[in-house]
Length: 340
Ligand code: 13P
Image 1 (cartoon, rainbow, N blue to C red):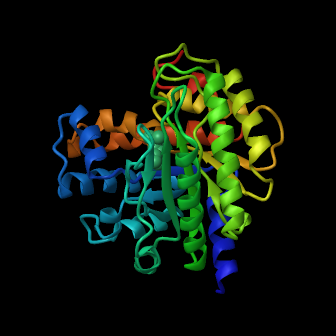
Image 2: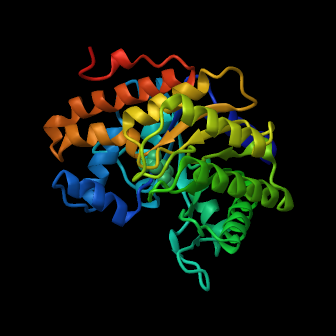
């Protein structure tokens, strides 16, 4: 297949009605933090066990079209020797890979951060592709305060995201462009909306400069929300403000917008996505690419015990199903565990 049709085939698979992505690409320190909560030590074996459990969940492919993996997982196998990317692919779930190398302080810009990982990216992508990856993810983060993020951080991160996306497309890999405006802090929803609009505007300007084909990428933004330390907002308000910012900044050529959950509870993340999809027809498909909001309930059910695999998988499948319904604006809160 030539490059454009390979990219189109991946996009067509990922962007399906009622389906979203599972983000299971936590770095070493992040997965250690998640495991600590349930008293499980993070080592290669415990990470393999957890991610095998996720990917072997019966029926997951009905609601999940792609999974974002961490580099280590790409090379790991299930107990029966099946490579984990293949385990996903067998369920109709396309394997993807996080390719950024994390963030560090942006020099001369106190409080701002920059994501690194462009060096050698084309070479790494060729290897990931051979291991089965068909799409990639790069996350840029923006801290929010009255002053942050600064102009330099917005421009430098947009430039890196666009450069990454262009390299991916050249390598036959669909890029997921993830600019995350963080929820940390007590800022207002209006402040989050302002920052998100500036960030997305700059990101699409950079994507244009780098000649990225918008039809062959996905956007993974944060929702417009008040800071975690401020009073929460109702789903209808989150939906209205988020969609307004997206309409102002994201060209209709982008096939899908797959939100991150970013510290929302699983139920909030589902209800907010559902509220957006109840607003009527959109230029793009609005879906989910959740990490914590999909994995938290199964993680709590698992507790590191192989004997808990079945209840953990049921908990994952329920979250995936509810989010699948939210993609269609058909979420039913009564189906939540313990509801009614
Ligand atoms: P959360 O949904 O937990 O924010 O994770 C999504 C993700 O991929 C962050 O990079």
